[in-house]
Image (cartoon, rainbow, N blue to C red; front, side, top):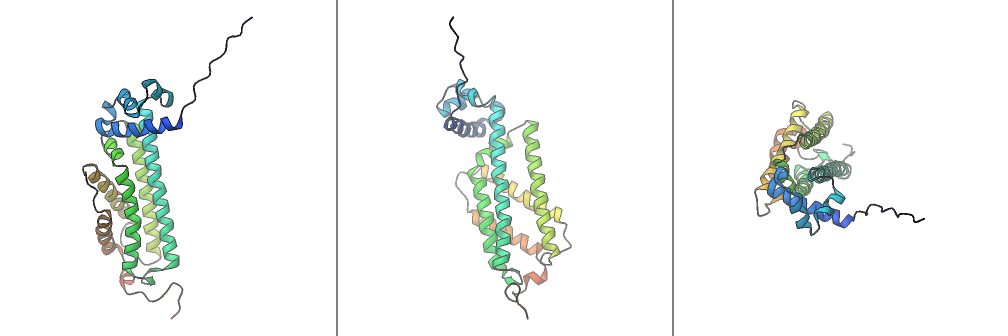
Length: 230
């Protein structure tokens, strides 16, 4: 009696999956999610339409993964930024106590420029996102925006409690301003062909932010290193 051999599903190739995601980013940016075609994504990746469905259930499935990865990178960058700020405070000090405003400006400008670099590298995703009409994607972005606003607001409130940021400004409003500014920067990038001076963008925004937020004590010349006694 002959036994029929069972055919197991062909394993997916991680390299092909990444190629499909790269191709999908470009197609979504070019045509939008609604009008992008699986055939065009597969052709751009150099594979068959069947290979696409070996990796993804639909173009919406691919877009969801692209968006999740992008938001994850932004969240990781924000977390690293906070860690770098704490390290700066330990090593140099806070404004008015060890650190000058220019030292803090240079430090924060570098961190914000790194975040803008992430947006610039992923501006095709931002272009696609602006043209995505599906409610699940809008909800993913809304949830991410809410988390970022809460994170920024908590950071602002903490610094207000330490006395070097003004206490008469609502931290939630500051969170809206900062998150909204970076969203606006990202949208501007979508229409640019040449890379702008991201460092100048960072410094311009930080200048406005510092002038509105820092307490008089923080704007005075530093009194000495952290922990130094009179």
